Length: 287
Image: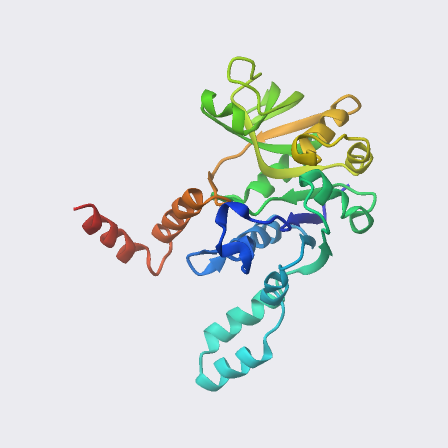
């Protein structure tokens, strides 16, 4: 069955960016001139997704406003003769069909995904965490969908990590299948380096079968009362094959200030308009 829907989670508190996130959604932090959430939506669209289910929460209205039409702004730009910019603003509000669901409690990724059950229905779907912003020639989700189309099972994005960083990731127990594709034999959440089954860490992209909802429903809360999606996925492995895609691309964890700064620099350097001037500035700054 074709993967038509993508869940984008945007309901977290963004505590690592306090005090900014007292009044501003973390997902609206800019990477050059577009917010984090825009890149997540673009990745889904460029991968062939037809509908997006956005999980938001209290204080996240700016996200909905961003993807809505702004008639006042459009009128202003039209009167000023800013036609290319006007066209760009109209394209944002017509990018894709977005359905919004409010997560009333922040109880982990598994809890956020479970909130979408009625909208997702009985079909496979993608999950995108906008904190993980990934630059590559082919969108990461598109690479994963190619694996899904070939093997027919759920797919998780992974990347090679340093051994000492295993305590920060869910780590897969892999069996090589072909190229960058692995069958997942098991998952371990944040293991110590000496017991980690591999150096392949899970990042914020998933393609999941609808059975994940039943698995989440029987998953016990873990640390801080949160329902971990990796615990639910572990249940699925007992009944069906799941795969990992070691994607081709450069990932930045923009969910923390240092990672966000690194992502901003990387994307600014690659920007066609400001990239050359910014590169010159950085070279002068080093001196």
